[in-house]
Image 1 (spheres, helix red, strand yellow):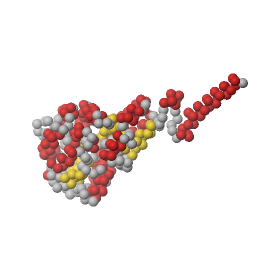
Image 2: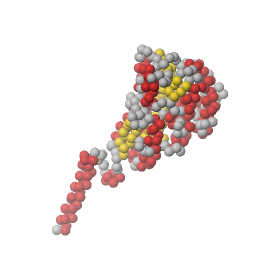
Image 3: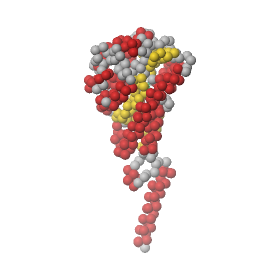
Image 4: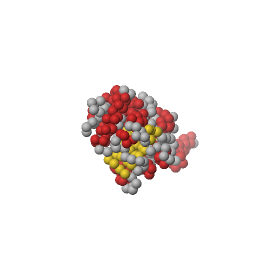
Length: 359
Ligand code: SIN
């Protein structure tokens, strides 16, 4: 009898375990565990990812690719939820939300990071990088390493760099080809002192408004112009209030994907590996596609009847570099020397005549 009771008990326990593993997903809405080890260790993770741009932009599309890849690689155990267009936080609010673990991942523009770490001013120095290859060299080389080291001291985990592209200038009344063309115009810039000083040095004034407010502020006439990438100018409709687009490529808009360090430490190693792989894939895709996405936006902008477009030449760029040379001197003293020295040689602002002078 005793033997029968214990045999019956074991059968019941076995059935209960099978029910839990096999059908648990149906009732809990969570992914099914794959083996006994996972039953003990696994729990679902939700990774909230906030960003401020539209879904059809380089960053918006890379975020979606990343989320899909994580879903696939973790069988749904890490669920990435994306909040685009600043629906939860504007770019500066995102940093607090990340620190508070209200979101676990953000991908702010370099200029936004300068509020938290002045070493990131380096990206905003005008005409420092002259093409995508130089930017990639900086991402992958010593400069990228120094900047991630620096941001980690401020409580953020740096994961990867994401591309967008070079910035261009829009204005309602004229092209901005020579420095003096900016005189008396009001430009919206991101919250970086280097960007404010760039436009102020050439006679303009500046305002920092969150990205989501720029369209409306252009419409109401509170600002006259913007500087941004073609994909942002097009996807946010800035061009509707701007008749002139000058292709200046005056500095680079890239992103640092940042994570909450405690959330990262809490992730089991297999999930960390999956997140890293998914980021690598999304980053490689973006590296290939971001230039094409900006080209497509340029094509759409050329198609607008009211839009006049001018491509600034090297001699015109040289005039800007000359006018803005004092910025290099000033910020070389603010950005940490290890970061300045990590700049690839071709971009050194210490060159006698300024970067790329005479190129
Ligand atoms: C972004 O690309 O993240 C926003 C850029 C901006 O605020 O102008």
